[in-house]
Image (cartoon, rainbow, N blue to C red; front, side, top):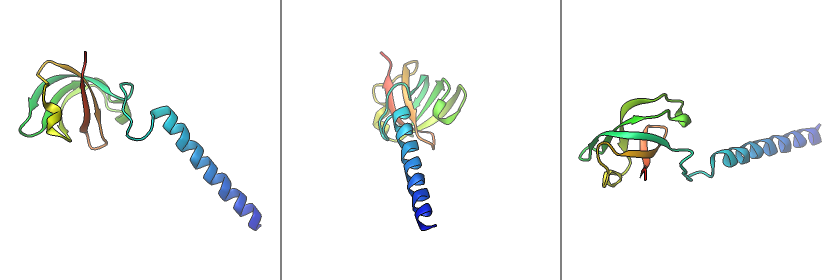
Length: 106
């Protein structure tokens, strides 16, 4: 009985480890950002003083959010430097809808 419980515990630990590994392979390591995870958008308005940006964005797949126009906060106001209304960008948001990365499209 005790041996069976140990085997089940090891099996559970292995399964959780395997799921985590598959997730990292599918989405990249935690903290790693690439354009396949980022969302495309057009800048409609920038409010540098308040650290917000209005974007007309495509679907945010990581949040299952459809395309729309909405206001986002930025984690760091310096991210808004060198951006202008009408620019097209790639952006990445966290679960609280704060922009954590912005890249101007070339």
